[in-house]
Amino acid sequence: RSFLQKTLGAQPGAIVDEKGRLVGEHHGLYNYTIGQRKKFDLLGRYKEPTTKPYYVLEKDIKSNRLVISQDRNKLLEHTVLIKDVNWLSGRATEMPFSVMAKIRSQGSLAPARLSYSREKGYRVLFKKAQLSLSPGQSLVFYSNQEELLGGGIII
Image (cartoon, rainbow, N blue to C red; front, side, top):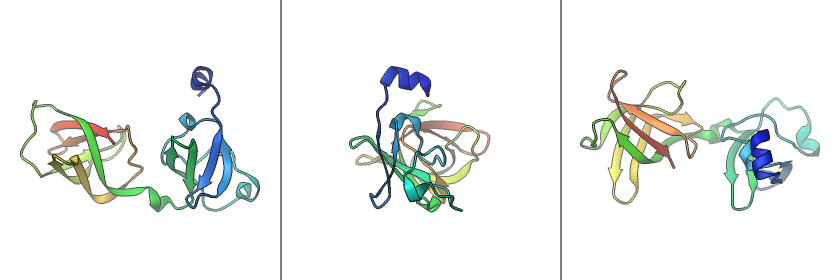
């Protein structure tokens, strides 16, 4: 964090809830990740102890706003698009097909369906909703739990 602050400088902005209400201030969007649930500089009544934590839903770069919510379920998604797909075999197999997908190095493999269309590119549809599918994260896919097929970047 200190490296980013030294390099980019402080870039303060608003922290808002999902309805757009001002609830705090941040010192640079680069300090947060989607799904993060701590270290918020909140205002007034939002500082009061609560049984439900806040989570980062979105980093709105254009308006320099951090959007947070106490509803963890808003971070769950079934579908994600990926780009810059690399195939270990050098080429894609016939689509759509079933895969086991993983979105974090320490994450679990999850059943999914991988498809491709010229309009939208590669699409991964998870059987069970996944938490915090964030742009910029890597997603890898396997034919089973042993054979790595390839991977791409979440957009």
